[in-house]
Length: 176
Image (cartoon, rainbow, N blue to C red; front, top):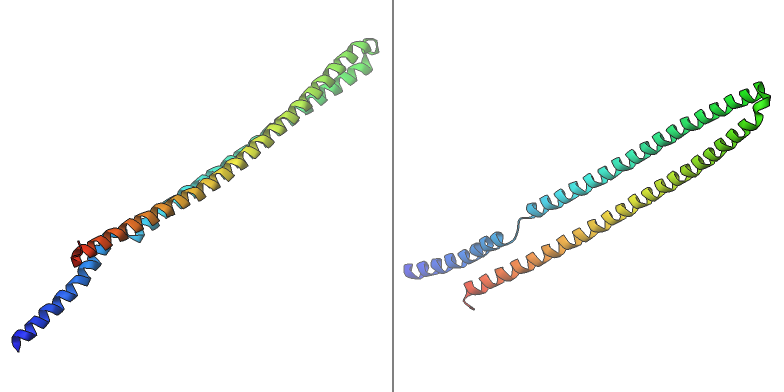
């Protein structure tokens, strides 16, 4: 009777070891979810930093545009002051009126030229803003592509791990 009990206990102990060994094997093969959480958190931090840098860049461009507009406004005021001085000179010196008409024409041409330059600068700023928006869209699409790639690689690694675990299990059972 005692030998039968011992045999039954040995069989039960062997049956209990197999699942714990398999659990240990599976735990060693499958990657830890904390690893993937850390990687996804790191990717999110990088994406957030890119967005912050992009916002900072947009703010710098806005400030730059304001500074340029302010400086051109000062130039316009200076030209207006010079024009006023010439009007006062016209009143004082009526004999040299023709010469100052030529100067007025030059200033009008300069003002038209400056207005054209302002338009070109405004168009350039619009192009830069459009370029920034395209870059933002490109970054968003890259983010999506990177996430899809990461998920694909994760799925492949899980599949390989399962196949490895299945092979080890089959080898343990004695199929191979």
